[in-house]
Amino acid sequence: MSEHDFRTVKSSQTVLKELMVPSYANFGGKVHGGVILSLMDKIAYTCAASHVKGYCVTASVDSVDFMNPVEVGDLLTLSASVNYVGNSSLEIGIKVVSEDFREGVVKHTNTSYFTMVALDEETRKPVQVPGLILEDEQEIKRFIEGKIRKELKRGHRAEMSKIKAELDLIREIKKLEDENCRLYKL
Image 1 (cartoon, rainbow, N blue to C red):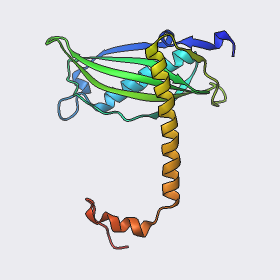
Image 2: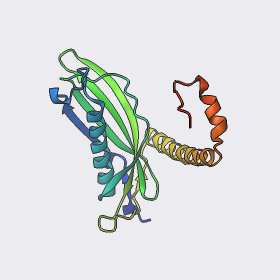
Image 3: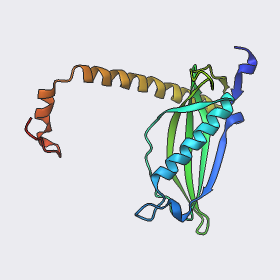
Image 4: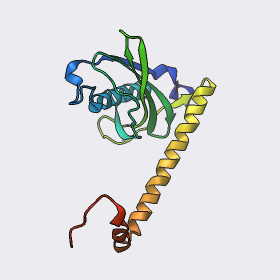
């Protein structure tokens, strides 16, 4: 790759701010998690497409743990950054913070990692993504952690495939006696 095939982390960092309005509320009166997930997907795409300078799709989302509720009237700030790049994929780290600016209360609501894949717009086949220029210790650390997450996901998929292939249904059914389920007679 030539030098122009690399981009800095800062060149694609993205911030999205949105006021949480009443139409975003769930039945409990808090902002619906699906609204927040949609905003996270939007900022992940924006960050990835900005780095790639092209079309990207969401390939996977690591767990999204909602640590604090988001209230109607809060200002939600989503920050996204390219943490890691592979051949055609990018890991986008997203941090979500809610702010009740009337009370001055700021809460970290969640952090998640989206894996995006760059695609050719015509063929819809994966394309090479630009490399990442790591300019400080934090960027290096995030890149290494992203690489580790990718390796762990690959290992987890392989382990699940092995478990499924070797599943002894009779033995596993016997283990369900202490679970919160009821089996119908087959």
